[in-house]
Image (tube, rainbow, N blue to C red; front, side):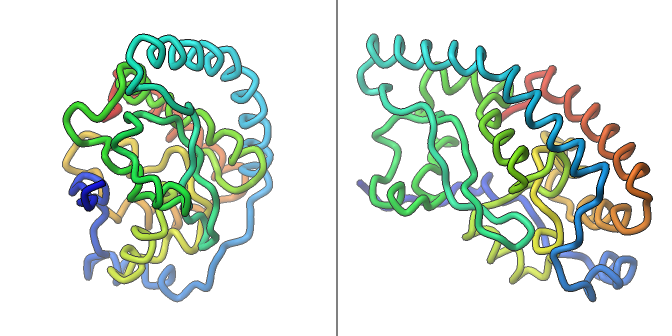
Length: 240
């Protein structure tokens, strides 16, 4: 397989500005990860369990669709699930996903190591399967991550967990949020997906600041607002 070129769309996160460093100086002085908050953790467990239950029939239908497409178009056949190594609260975790792309676009050696770069061809024209295109449009490829939420590797709300490659790059840029908080399915920055604000690190620092300042119940209220905004993005089919 030819050498994989990392797509520029894959890492939109920017370094912290001088304004961020001044405004959130106290965050840069923290040694993570931060302790869990009771209501946030309880909410994650309950929602993770409920969403796994709700997702089961959806995943069964998607599995059937994968099998049918693979039978009709053999080059699109293959496993439905995979994972690559991501980072959440400074810890390496398996980031579970639904496969979007054809097997020929996956680097087999990198896939064995669970490197993100092996699966990064989803922005390449014609790389996605037909089912994969539908799955991505409505963020269904994220459904397996409710298992990670349920077992405590992730949260519903938090900075998006990124690959080890991108985590090291994020740290080298001077960002610290992903070493402090568990990665989430949604975040203050992620609900701006599709706009020029996507990748602006100020939202992640604002969330950490609120995590520190709010009561446990107050933080849950903020999470519920972020989830509502995220649902609006999903309903509009904002996946790319």
